[in-house]
Amino acid sequence: MLLGRVGAIAANGFREVIRDRILYFIGFFALLMVIALRLLPQISVGADEKILLDLSLGGIGLLGAVVAIFVGTGLINKEIEKRTVLVLIPKPITRAELMIGKHLGLSAVLIVLVTVMGIIGFGLLSLNGIDYPVGSIALSLIYLIIELSLLVAVALLFGVFTSSILATLLSFGVYLVGHFSRDLLELGNLSDNPNVKALTETLYLILPDLSRLNFRNEAVYALLPDTTQLLSNAVYGIIYTILLLTIATLIFSRRQF
Image 1 (cartoon, rainbow, N blue to C red):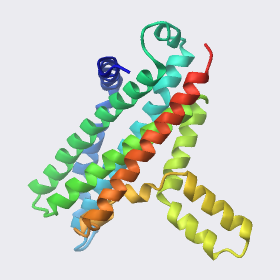
Image 2 (image 1 turned 60 degrees about the vertical axis):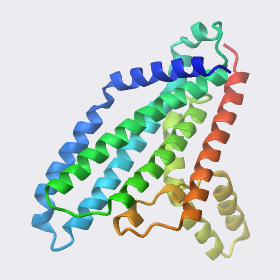
Image 3 (image 1 turned 30 degrees about the vertical axis):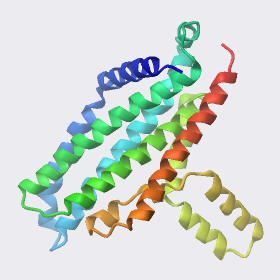
């Protein structure tokens, strides 16, 4: 594997996604924040600052997830459906390089997206005199990027062997279950049915625990976990992403075109 080829694929993917009207998400987020800053102080009593912080982080996370899933499922699937993959395969590019390059390209777009939306959102909050823990917020956005990178790997995995619509639905399913996997496990422990308990434990082991990368609620109150837990959660997210990309590459390498 040559880093130059991976970098070229990532750069090309980055430009392709940026051109695909992805920056409209930034304008939508800015409009949402301006409307919230106008309306919330009038309808909430004393809690508008915390609500605005939650809204800012929640909006960035949700819009980032939408981009990661909708664009991620089409990165490889679009090449397959349009048969452009037939042009790429004969070239001196391995399928692993193509997969990793596509992932890095979209991950770079998400880094830009999260960074710009973070600057806009919290810049507007600062202009309106709202205080917030800068360090905790910044750290939560870094973990959001790790979460979105993992979500891109999930979307790529489903995109290499299913249709775009089914891959999108499955990816959203993983996103939703991943954020409630601990609650699902607790629900299984409360059940008297051993089959339900076994099912919830299996789902918890197989599906990514995205709650380990979600510190947005804690960041609002500057109550982040200790350094050891933060590092272990980051390593968890990175290793899980690598595992998903490996599985996706293996499946993609077995496909015949």
